[in-house]
Amino acid sequence: MDVKTGFFYLFSLVLLFAAFRVITARNPVHAVLYLMLAFSQASAVWLLLQAEFLAIVLVLVYLGAVMVLFLFVVMMLDLDMSGLRQGFWKHFPLAALVGVVIALEMAYVLMGGFRETPVAAVAKDVLAQGSNTKALGILLYTEYLYPVQIAAVILVVAMIAAIALTLRERKDTKFVNVQDQVHVKARDRLRVLKVDVTKPALPPVPPEAAAQPAAPVEKKA
Image 1 (tube, one colour):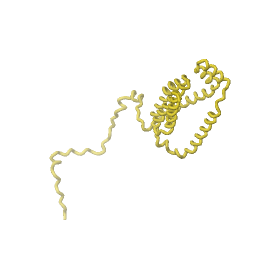
Image 2 (cartoon, helix red, strand yellow):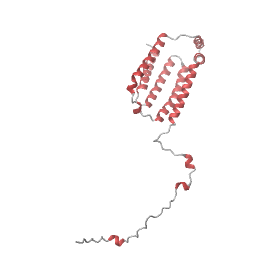
Image 3 (tube, helix red, strand yellow):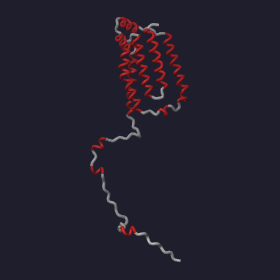
Image 4 (cartoon, helix red, strand yellow):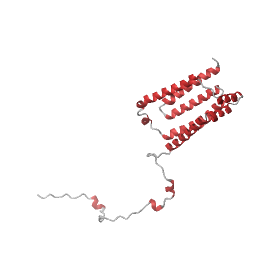
């Protein structure tokens, strides 16, 4: 086994471990950090496959922008994990069934191999000339144009949903309306009310009378 194969197995093992921890971590912040680790290992695998453009785009776009945004959103949401875990085992059979179906579909595609289309053949010829970025652009904007557009719409919807969840009104949050604070007037802060007297005030008790003990009350037979 050469050095390249050894690095491939190392990056793959770390990638599988990080992907497993993404779905098993109890803390959502830890799950996002493990996802960032998985992306970094996938970028290293792409470097071994001589796909330098995909590797650098994954690092700059996902690790440098998207995942940092996800991390900030998860930290701002302050998710209640105890409430999210309720009913986990109730929906586990359906989730396991969906996972098995996805795994079988991926196995069918990988075992059957990828069919080479005419556009892919053109991209392969361009790649042979030494420009994998141009070959990737040809594939994205010719054969995979609709998936790219759908992915763009999904990202826009996810961004709008993240902003909506972040700006939701919370009952335990105290804030000051700046506009009301600026336009406040002195008469709005203090108001003197005139209260009518309901009964006359008692005369003040002299200190000597207050110090003397009360006289005993005689009981009549």
